Image (cartoon, rainbow, N blue to C red; front, side, top):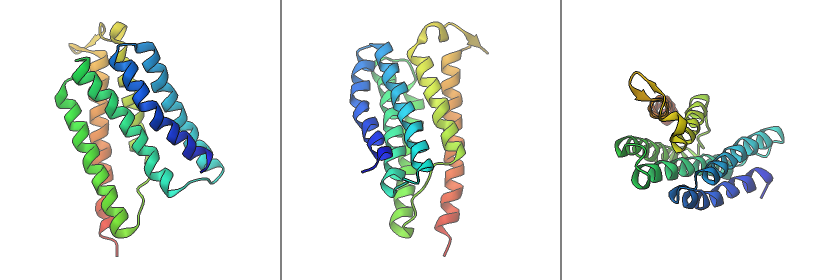
Length: 180
């Protein structure tokens, strides 16, 4: 067990604590935990690359921890806090499920572990920003652009970025799947 993997495990442990504080509307603690999870994500990736501590487990667990944190936030913000539309959450859940299944197929059939790419990282950053802006509805919910609250607009942009990432990963999936 190396330091990057320990940081990933820490992120998994932060998820239920974050969920508790978010669902009980203790937004400052929830955002601090969310930011701590994001910081450990950046830190574990940096340490893993810099010190050549990349593991197959880390390649799978790291994005899984990120996705579980994001999905936890989306579900609570939709079902408990009623901040975002359930339809947008369902789009993200379908996308993540399909990507997870695709990664599993590639691993089972080709022993290929899917790594994050720039488009996936950008999608994650935009989602982190959107989640924080949605949690802190004031002042972001008061500001409008094109008649849409800025925080919801950033969330919609995050969904678009996620769909773009999905398309790019799907292209990669097809290319890898058809390699001999």
